[in-house]
Length: 405
Image 1 (cartoon, rainbow, N blue to C red):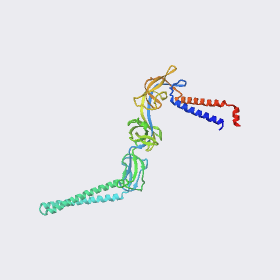
Image 2 (cartoon, rainbow, N blue to C red):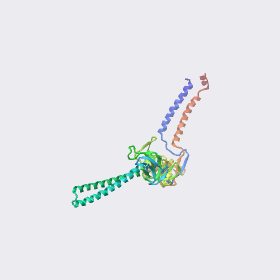
Image 3 (cartoon, rainbow, N blue to C red):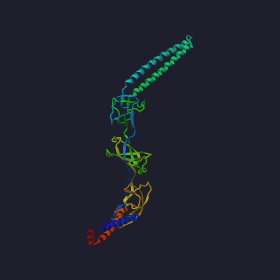
Image 4 (cartoon, rainbow, N blue to C red):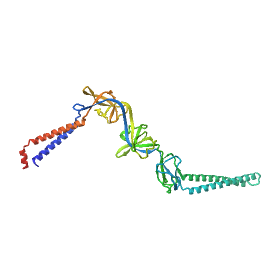
């Protein structure tokens, strides 16, 4: 290793040590903020609207989504619906083959007629035997037998009536109608398909369609755990769907999930906002942006966040609370530090609770403290490098020529 290389490595080592020392020294010192030596922007303390809101992405969900199934099994012979159709309560959704149900119903009706006839005959026999028994023409055993036949006939009539009712119910079960007014969200079967009963089948039966009333909808939004403490049931929210960015919907927070979930390594809580969907533009599954209004005050004394010199302004404060802060108030050509109490912040403005009056002029240094430290660090590094450069300049050209040889 030649002399020039040794000198370069030595200078680099000195500069590195000096840089580390300077960085440690700069972290230790805490220079006071102020406009001295820097350009200052003047702002006026004003009264105006102060609005704080939490934004989150959400999805449109129907409030009551109903999955329709059939109590009966069989072939679908009628399916007069398509996805997106609006149907009224009682409207036909699907109809199954009713051949077996019609036969069973006809048989039940015939059995009922026979049971009625048998009952009528049993009643007549009982009345005749009763009169004969009163006249001592027949024995008591004969009368009791007639009474038994009457009871059997009555039970057969009751059984036939029940069988007919059940046959009628099975006939009705083969016709599926809309339980509510709503929109067909999904259709799972087609005409001609064999479906299983949703009552007797172990697997739960074959779904036919999903229906929901979309006149009111739920917006499910995942709110970051940092903001969830600001949200309560009953707060007003504004909703914008990605499909209709110019349309603003107003809703209300109706539910806050008691348990968090992790989404892309971020802990969020599901917040449900109910919104009226009168125009029907909000479709199930649409992406939306939800803005939940925490506070909206029309006449509040505020200052820019950048005007606060010493305060944790990044943390929202509870209503009525506050924290100490320092601002620079302009008096003549000077800027005088004033202590004020600040309240909530929306990360652009800070609410002023006390210590300032409307119309006061504040100074905001245009150079940040971080930039000041960076500038000082650069200056010290340049000084270190110039020291090494001077050493190199003291060497004679003859020495360098000698090294080249």
